[in-house]
Length: 202
Ligand code: ZN
Image (cartoon, rainbow, N blue to C red; front, side, top):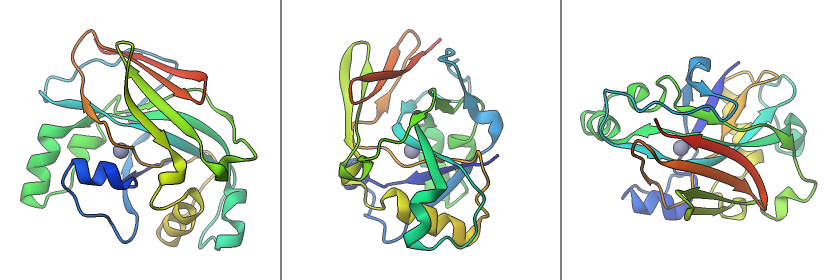
């Protein structure tokens, strides 16, 4: 399976990191070894001093596809989850400065937190609201209505370059409010009122 991630898919988040609004989706990938499942703790890695949380809606791909056309795109995902795209912001800034790939900052072990899956609500196109608590305080509040590239656009765009396979995941991008974690922090993620994700930093 493959894990696709989308960078800068919410305008307010692109602005907070002083990045331009993209004109096509920014795609990167994480390996399956990045997954952190079952609300397991995240162990702060020794190679970074600035790990950031990024809460994201994750799509699960339900069938194989290549060059998916827009009117069929919604049939390629059936379940959603919450994910945290943990990012070593200090390493990422260095990679960006040098124009290097940013895998070491984004694709390291445990960098892809994934909650349990839930069925995709029928009315998802009206906007899914989701939020993240850090130590009990709301730090991120998202609504998929604000996506620059909605789910269907991502399916079409990714499948131009990569064959989608059943079980692949797409982290669809983070809203504004990203920030650092430290050892001892507790992160809790919700879609609507549904508490789906817990992650303690150790
Ligand atoms: Zn992200």
